[in-house]
Image 1: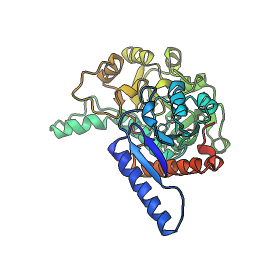
Image 2: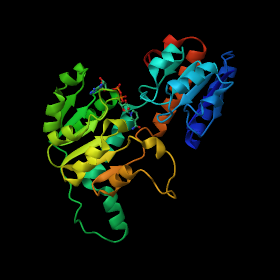
Image 3: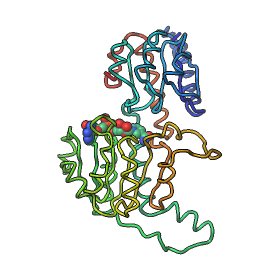
Image 4: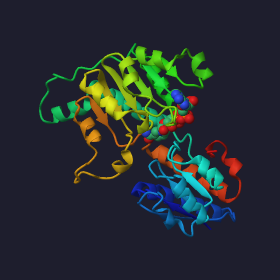
Length: 345
Ligand code: NAI
């Protein structure tokens, strides 16, 4: 039996993982396979250095984007005999990978469950902000058919700057190409396939100067933290649209608020926020939210925030569960190498 503690679990996680675990267990029985069965325990609270103690008796932990898998958490996990941290997401900025290596704890993730899922949400933010369908919906419901304040711009022929042309960046580019947009990219590892398709790579500065829309699709690292700051915002043209569906830490919120107040930043679409762990994935509708920066962002008419739902489709969740469970079985059976790209080293 492989005992796994799942953290930050929502009802939809439990449903989908149980369905996959039960189906795998019955398939194994049908085929006479003697593979270790997986036993899941679901905790709604996050994994961090204070809660790691609850991992006594488990073989592995399964975590999400806002669990704090820092050195202190990992040290407790190692003492309790945990051998594997299985991320059920793509980004791994919340894990101290170096500490995990020193403590001989394997770390796996789901690098590509459905790049199109996040790309489509990115487009949803762009189109909603631009054509203001969220405002039109409410107006029309109340019998107000005035178009005042709803004017947008045509995407066709606009230049969109993509920072990070990996799997999600490329999916966004494919969609935007269909809209007839010109694409500029910045990525330290340019993709030849995109160059062959006519996509132009440029410097970060040129991308900021030349784009009417800037969309972030790079991971959060030391190099990319606050890649959007007062200096980069000043380089962008007045009225620019900024979209972040990657990680909150890429954006300096204070600089963004200043640019919004100046009327320089024309549109802001966020699916992620630097301090989202205190807010996102829970109902705070009856609470007094203490994060003044976040609350200030919500006051702007040209800001649209979604609560980290870029990944949230049936297809993506099924793929996440499937790959995460494969990773857990591979690690438990000592076949870490078979996890290939999923293994964070
Ligand atoms: P990927 O690994 O396929 O692509 C990331 C790209 O960023 C790579 O091409 C890499 O070379 C590039 N990059 C690295 N450092 C850079 C830098 N300093 N400047 C510019 N580019 C840089 O990752 P993928 O799958 O495209 O995901 C991108 C990010 O999207 C993830 O790191 C994650 O943070 C975020 N994400 C958000 C989700 C959501 O629900 N909102 C869901 C899944 C991922």
